Length: 144
Image 1 (tube, rainbow, N blue to C red):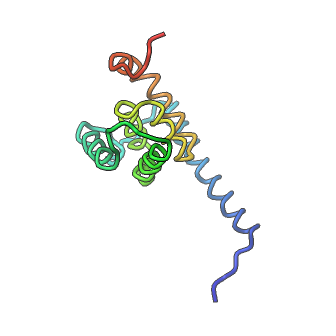
Image 2 (image 1 turned 90 degrees about the vertical axis):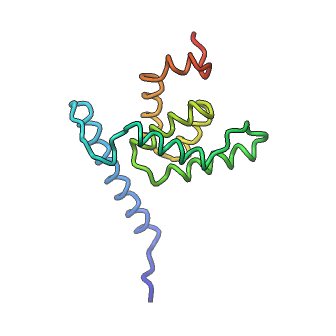
Image 3 (image 1 turned 45 degrees about the vertical axis):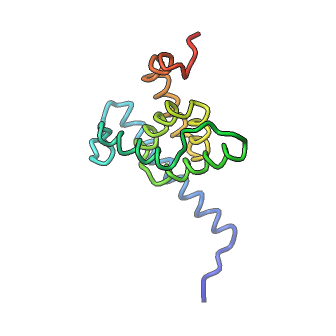
């Protein structure tokens, strides 16, 4: 007979999982701030990886403008689904590519849909830090 889990136990398990995730992210942030860069082969971003990710996004997204709100929401949900199983580095790089191809608003909505504040913050840092000039040149962002 299956074990019945009380709402309190389920909530406790969720809290423990969130605490574990938070501890992992804090450790990663501390390493980043200390200048320690882990060289995990899967996490390394190369031109080949970016091309692979771009082809994945191209196959899961349409390049035509979104005609209505419902279609826009479906497109965001599809992009969220495509990103869910990626590691954090690939998610951020993919979100940057989405920002360049679909627009910053779309990319931010996808990042928000992932419900991961770290990813949203990292996307913001990446867009501000590294891509600001490129976005201005491509007309995706206005220079103030």
